[in-house]
Structures are given as structure tokens and as C-alpha cells.
Length: 139
Length: 139
DNA sequence: ATAAATCCTATAAAAAAGATAGACTAAATA
DNA sequence: TATTTAGTCTATCTTTTTTATAGGATTTAT
Image 1 (cartoon, each protein chain N blue to C red):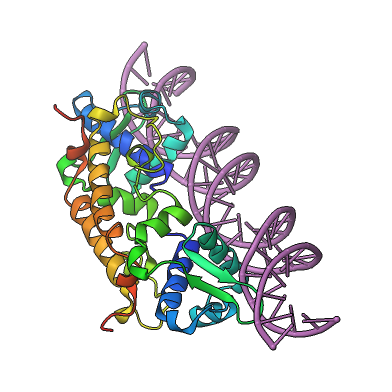
Image 2: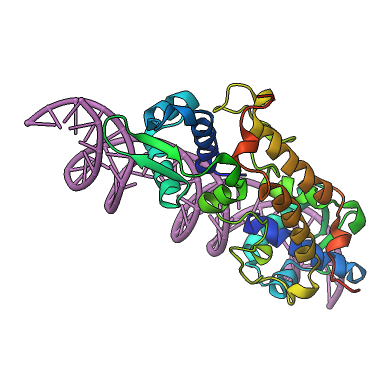
């Protein structure tokens, strides 16, 4: 399961994407609209900013905004940033690989093989679907 | 990521499946062969037994053994038993569903839709691949 | 009887997740 | 330029989950 952090990030990003025309959006507004603890959300948005996904403006009229068009932000990027590996096992992770401590040879491990396929099938979706694809349906 | 518990369970089950002919297998043997803490493994095997996946015999000559042929144990069963939901979000989980707290209407939420697809693609593999499919490759 | 093994429950230790606090910095504007 | 507004940064706290261990109870073979 994705952590609350990542779930909140998605909902915040959706809100930002659906309100691009309004200019910078207040943390407090997002927190209220999406029912998220404001202080927790603050940290999350900052992390997204430091990763170059969001931009911000301080002072009156300030807030957060997307740095890229929604269709250029793959979902996998957000998950990896805030949650870490997408794979179910360290030994099949592309970005957070760790050697398996419990089997003799990964090249011959059937678990490794199957979990590699699960990873691929998830990535096929998560690398290609973007923020744009998770905005409100039928709109 | 799957928890260590689930990872250990898979390796233990693989060992048991690859040694069905030997009769009951000692916890200590599995622990040693697969490099798992024996006491932790004890709890895991007990849980698998209580779920009807393993059987056991006490006393001399005792140990653990599979209750079903490996090809009748889907990987999804093990994951759900020890780790819980396979889905990335509570609102798309088939077995551990929880309503989304952050969006107005799941029926119209694009995140819900995409994560539902990720779940389906993972389940397509994890429901159909069994213990038999993760035994040592090329054998 | 004894030794061998699992059973069972409790608990502890460590790590991760979730949330909060508060002082600091930058920008707008009156 | 003082004030207000809003993000920045870092630290800490609490809770939950994960990982692991302890030890007596029970069952079985010999």
C-alpha cells in the first residue's frame, strides 16, 4: 500500500492541476479541500518542490503551483520520490535494488522472476499514466 | 514492498515444496538453509499452518509440510494472509476495502481508476502464479 | 521416562509512519 | 519601512508496524 504521505501528495497534485488557472494555491486551501493535516501537507509539498515538481511563491498572493504540465508528471515519479520502491521485492527493484539474502542465485530464483513481471506490469501503467490521467473523470 | 515476514514465508514455502519427498522438515533446517531467524520463522510457519497452507507434526521426526500440491497455492493467497492488501490504495482493495477520505466521489476519481488497473494487472499474475511457478528455474 | 519437536502467548526492540511545533525567511503592500 | 502573509526548515513527538526474541506448554516417537 502507498503511504498516507504519497496518497496525500496525489490528492494535492490533483487539486493543483485542477486549479492551474488560479495561480499559486495556499497550502491551507488544499489541506481544507482535501481533508489533510495542514502541517503534514506542508512537509509533503516542500518535498515535491525540492524535487522540482512544484514551485512556490512566498508572501501575500503566494502558494504552490505545478512546475510542469500535468501530462509530463508520471505517477511512478511521485511514488518513487515519496514512498520508495514500486517493486514488491528489493531484488527486483530498478531504483532501489538490494541483493536477496535468502536465495542462492537470483538468476535462477522463480520468485525473483515472477515479482519482476509484477513490477513490469505495474510500471507499464505507472510510468505512462500521468497527473493528467488522474484528474476528475468524464471531464 | 512485501514485508520480511512475507518474503521469508515465500522462501520457506519454496524450500518445503522442493523437499516434499523428504517428509516433515524441521523449522531449524529451513531457517539455516534460507538464512532466517529461527524464532521469527517459527511464528510465520505457525500462521501458515493455522491458515491451512501447511501441516505439522510434533516430536521426533516431526516438522512442517505442505497441505496442498504447490500448484494449488496462488501467490496472492500468501501475500494477503501475511501482508494484507495487494492494492496500492485502500479504496481499490478487493479484500481490505476502505472508503477514500480525500476525494469527493470514488466513482469519478481518476486516481481510483488508475490504481484499480494497477491492482488488476498485479492480480492477473499473483492469482494465477502459484508456489509451483516459483520453484527453481530450469528444473 | 526422556528427548525432540512444534505450539502458544507475551513482550521487547527497532524502525517507520504520521503528525505537530515553532522560529526563520522572503515577498507584497500600505 | 513596518506589517502582514505565506512558504522554509529542522526538530521532535507520538503512534503504529515490523522484526525479533523468550520461555513454558504440549505432543509424539522411542
